[in-house]
Image (cartoon, rainbow, N blue to C red; front, side, top):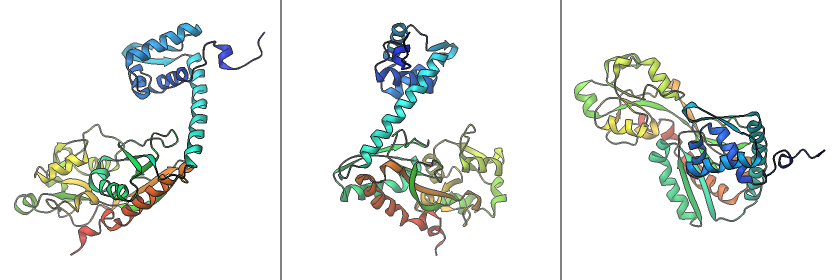
Length: 318
């Protein structure tokens, strides 16, 4: 009788890390198409590899359910847990090695929301390239919170205080929100808002009705009646464009609205309930990496110097 407890003894042929990556990706996505996309391979390749793996070890790892759903069997769950441990060890080693990199060269992966990248971030990335031409910047525009532990990005600009204990960073500014409209609409047609209780008398731009978990969208949906909305989109940049076109009033972060010459505030004061934060964060293992430190110094400090714009104080001047 064998005493060895390793997976390769239980399931001969499980000696390829790519097999474990495939199992973990399918278990996380519950669909083969999404798993293949996460691994950077096509669906047919993932299909062949999974079927060949199950045939080789003689164990069914996933039940194929209607709708393309893949549900892990007990064996599949056990392998996925082992694969996750292997991934954690690999990522920890990778972060440890990168964290000791003192060269001002190589690539830094940064994630940001579409709105911040459109309005403020890009000019600071240009400044960063001027002083650090040896560092390549890869910007991932994504409103999701990407995992820094899994190296989905090296640095994140986030609208909320990080809760993960393995992250390190600093707050750059508070972020204020206000209502904006085209001057012609406010001066000639509807007039400015007299207060938040006047929202029902103005055409509003909002998020699509299925949007959940967006603080401003949730607040607006509870504050204004559904009949006030004349246009919906899941993009704040498009809401900005629609407001400039005179379709209606948009609720925007002040750093996006206050610098737009074709918009004015419909109500002078920001909405106090919506004040948020802007943070720059990285994984604690990467804070000693030279290119990460350089990014914090140039881009982080540059954004922090615009604190009055982020906090909505520029729009109230004069």
